[in-house]
Amino acid sequence: MTERIFDDAPLLGRITANIVRLTPCPQGFCALLDRTIFFPRGGGQPCDGGTVGGAPVLDVYEQDGEILHILAQKPDRMEEAICEICLETRLDHMQHHTGQHIVSAAAWQLFGNPTLIARIERPACHIEFAQSMNEEQLTLLWQRVNQIVAQALPIRCRYVAPDQAAAMDVRGKITPHAQIRLVEIQGFDLNACGGSHCPDTSMVGALRWYGFKEVRGAFRLYFLAGNRATRHNLEQDLHTLRLGRLTQTESPADSLRKTEELCRRAPQLEQETVRLRRQLLEAMEENLLAEALAKPEAPAVYRLLENWEPRDAKTLCENLTRRHPLLTALALRRQGMLTVMACQRKGMDKLKLNQWLQPFWEAHGGKGGGSAFAAQGSVPDTPQAQADFAQLARRMAQALGE
Image 1 (tube, helix red, strand yellow):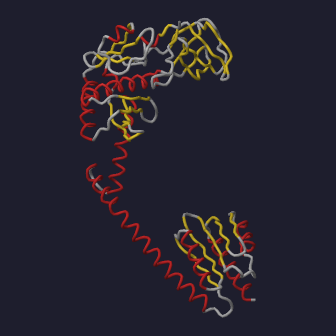
Image 2 (image 1 turned 45 degrees about the horizontal axis):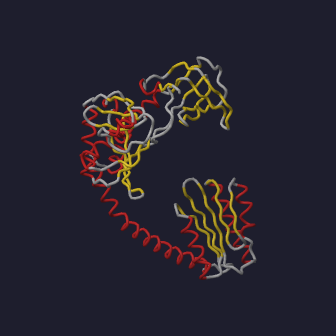
Image 3 (image 1 turned 180 degrees about the horizontal axis):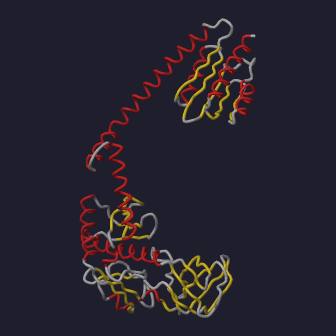
């Protein structure tokens, strides 16, 4: 059986080991070592990454009592192969696994709320509880958890026989094994677990909530610990400063009040925007229709519009051609692009609009498409493109009147 170095020396990042068995597998090679620092995935904790004999480790898992290492290539040696793990990742896993123990134990002691499952993931780890928790409970839980972290309580791991574990006050379910690994946070919690843990609670570092949601009838609480929590705190501080700049406020409380006010007003502002857009469309429609009907040679209009939405311009084209058999050509200047469109009533087949506009798109490095009755495309917005499309609109109007 492989000696589990990671159980007693979780912060050891490099050892030498002998490869006692190496067999090909679909991913590369499957290696069994006489000793290992690689934690095998399980219990919600991912496996460690690193190298064995220079070969990248793709996966580590336990099967039939053996810890198997999946290697991307054949290692450079079978005896005294150098094994290395990423200690930064190992510390991250230790901080979050130990943090999960503290959160789960505190939730059980404070509220009788048992843990269902837990996962070490990114960007945040999570715990699923049997019962939901409100903001007051989450505040009490956070205070108790960080109190335990600050006390630097020693953490001890040991193996006992199943009957010994059954006689102890162990929190949670004990999975049957020949030997049960117990993780004890002195004076606070005793739990059966195979994961890697910090030597004392202070190494968990700052712990903060990241979010929560209801999942399949369970309450999922996302959290961050240690270095991840510290980085997130900085990100949140920067977000708060940016929000203050956007809302022109000086404190997080003022920013929150201003944001809540804007969110309350948003539906009303959206309705007002829709109403004003409709009025603008109606006014522009009447203006363009009157302009077209005033032309004796052929009913046609051209207009350059600033910062219009393409959907509004398309609606304008459709409304005009529905009301009168005329040619409408619109150019929209928006975000450095010139969107051009032309439309006419179906049945007016004297002009094939897509054929007229295709050379314009090609000449100005753009693209577009459509049919004989409606065509639309975009090109980079330049004075030459605007002038050329205005000229094209006049030529189409002349061709329509001939």
